[in-house]
Length: 175
Image (cartoon, rainbow, N blue to C red; front, side, top):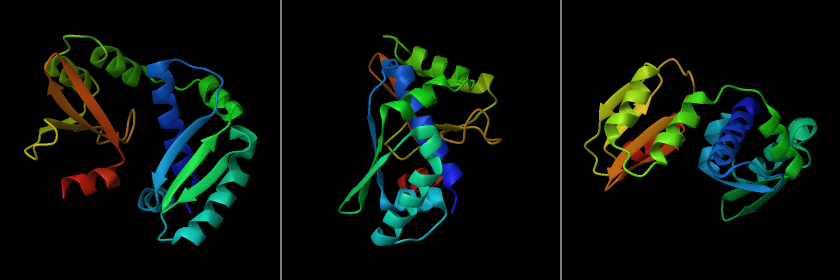
């Protein structure tokens, strides 16, 4: 099982939240469908097996994240990160300058898609115009730096909206 990938995904989600909303020492809930967890862990488990896998994950990250809570309802899992896990992620000194800049640009009224695409180009991202009607552009970093997400970009009125997906979850959208 690839616990590292799940831990990194949790860290990425919490980091994005902290950059957007600011840091507060509080609990955070992250919800995952069973399919996404299986992809992150590199498994094909049913609900009872996933519960056991997540219990093992909880034991593995306890020293960093504290005592995380795990619940499940109809194949949707909630990982409850305690305040000490949130604080641990906040104290990590990773470089998040790309994401900080993306949030700063897209958070500004009057942002245009060209500005956002220029930011991606400055980091040598792959950019393509989409024809699916859901998003205007797809952007990602072929070498995985600064991250491995698929960014779906849409210009609406006077701002740009982005959504981040794992490569596998993006594939579900693209089909």
